[in-house]
Length: 296
Image (cartoon, rainbow, N blue to C red; front, side, top):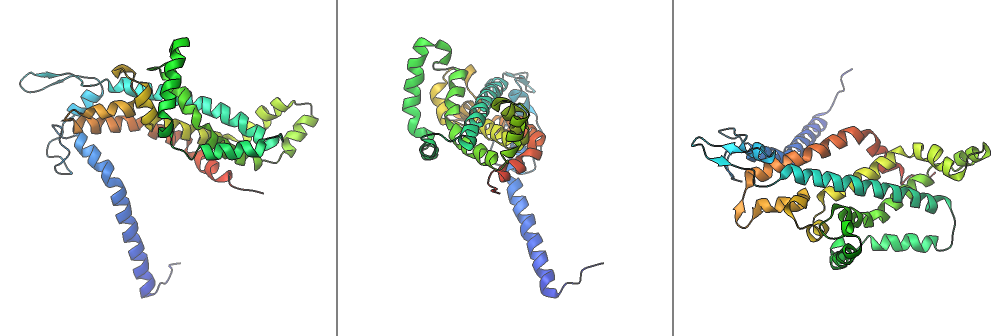
């Protein structure tokens, strides 16, 4: 049955719809502009939102293919974009996996065990996370510079050292997972222990399957943090082939050479793996982000 609305209610609904449509348009405008710039001939940030001429030259360069113009001039790819994306994915997957393993095991200890210094350690980790990583850049550089003398693959200009540096942000994930574990009744693990399961078996076979949403959240947050992080990567990585996408992208706008079209195509290309990951894991993200704060 159709709902009968007064004139004032009808105007409020129309105003709300107009506001929501304007909000969606404003939110999508930057993405549309990036798509438009990537499809225009030449490297210009200005111009019409709808290109008069469509060109895929920037996409070819971003994919590592040369471009030949009407005069036969060949333009090679200016930068190894695909290599940068691969480097970013490699560092992000390694650091996210290590962060997940450390945060899950540590959170279990803080949620289920009682030991001296537990509250103090939790408070100290929370306070340390409030300081930005930029303040530790000098220390991070000195540590990995010295570490490289003893273990070369953990020195400067190494993806392994960068991934290890990113695991320093594990404290915030420990707090998140700890809250989720505390929302799961310990009776389930005690029942498994009565049936003969060890503490490790109860942790792996009972607790972790129930914590899939928060595990997905921790992995996604750590993965995204590593993909977009710039200060630490810019200090530890030097060679062009070793750069991550966040650091390498600055070269598009460096030394008065503003390659806006190439930059836009690279930005869209880099967003594809992130979008795919969100589509695959979105069903766990909402539950994981909200359930950790629920106390029963």
